Image (cartoon, rainbow, N blue to C red; front, side, top):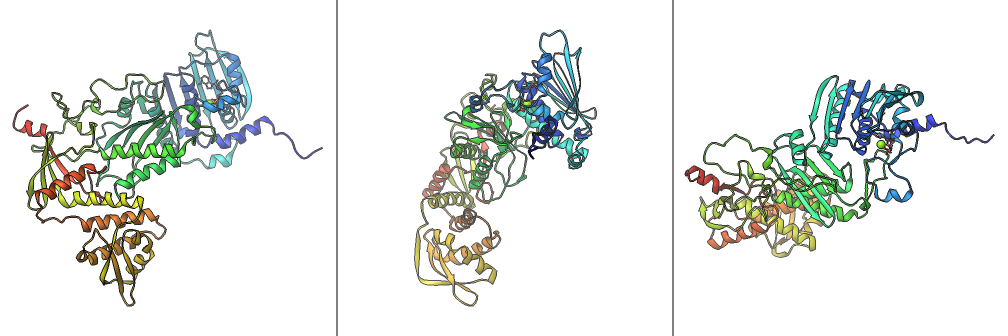
Length: 582
Ligand SMILES: Nc1ncnc2c1ncn2[C@@H]1O[C@H](COP(=O)(O)OP(=O)(O)OP(=O)(O)O)[C@@H](O)[C@H]1O
Ligand SMILES: [Mg+2]
């Protein structure tokens, strides 16, 4: 007899389970995705002991006939694809025909299902992959599946499960994500009889977002369509305060996805706007034709492959760039702030998501821009999208204490920190310049010597290539000194020593392995800070106009590279309200 044998079905299923089923949350993902594929409008999920003892998922979808119920638990049995070509444009969440048999092979499994309009239902019981019974039963229309004692027959796997609390947290996170993808489906999640989540079906993503996250003034809306790629969602606004980490929910064609291209685009978009490292909260929904991506990459379908990766990257980066640049300038208030919060109805999230979405995504008026005649924006409208950049042409009226520019436009009065604003402008210019080449440099007739401690000297020398691109030429001079022979034209000679010291300090704080761009950005931020007009410095009208004009053209004009606000605004509404003109 040969050495090679075909594995028995049970064992093959258990091996498949190793890929698809990692923990209770992954069981729930498969069962809920099946329910959604079956057209369910309501899905309830119950877990006991974090799902380790029991997971139950019930839906009101199309259900299964007795034959289908029996076949559903067979390996490679699916109603979702028929032939190889179908793999090219998958429109359902499932397609592998693997989930149910895999789950049934590592649990005590009960499936009860009744097809819509059928007289009675079918119950299939399976223990560790072996069918125990198939019977006709009375059942509600739809499907209910119970998965008890997950991994009871694979003790090694069971040991890897976390505490009940930790598993339960994973389950909540997952159900939240699924609920975000399918606002038109109602979800209920209970754990040990306690209701953790309940969202009735709603018409829009905005409504679902509110059900799950409540009012969120700290997020900005993303909305961009380029070709047949659409990106919508909410992301953390750029702000000095606030957490630098948050949940990152990314969905592609209503699938929960982890993707490096997208993750990279997010980091990129935030790092252009600020030098602070962050892993911001994002809820992003991408949609594209099914043929533009391959979902058959990963057993749990957690990864996808884009046909045109760089296009997706660029579109994401721009979508985020637009949204972040549009973040509102902090508003000044004359009276004590009105604590009454805006109903979420004012939060714009204007596009439909996916082809199957109800068309009524934009409530009438949701797009009313702040400041349109006769449509005074409601309270809390700071998130209202603006047709162009937040910063419209403004007229400088003068300076306050030689430090702040006072300016006006039709919509309000602004106080601009002249140093921070100029710094922002220069920072952008420098980075822009660097994408096409190096900064202009001027040779010093008389080299400058800067004395520095050894670590600081080291840090400068280690980054001499980047400094060179910025227009600095410097070298170790022996002793404690660094000799500077050329400077960026942007800097004046008297600023040089100070700038080099700060640069050294900045670069010293940078990890040795940090990317070149990171170092360049730090250098750019330091240079911008040194070259920008200072506080307590009188400005001519022309200079003020110039700063305002440049500022308006920068994409991220509401905060400086270090995260400080550029301007405060007193809105027209606020002024009118306080003079009792409304
Ligand atoms: N809740 C449900 N309601 C109706 N039919 C279902 C339900 N769950 C499963 N089915 C049927 O059982 C089949 C097998 O389900 P299973 O999850 O094993 O495979 P799949 O969804 O086709 O592919 P994948 O392995 O990628 O999930 C499905 O194709 C579907 O026809
Ligand atoms: Mg499935």
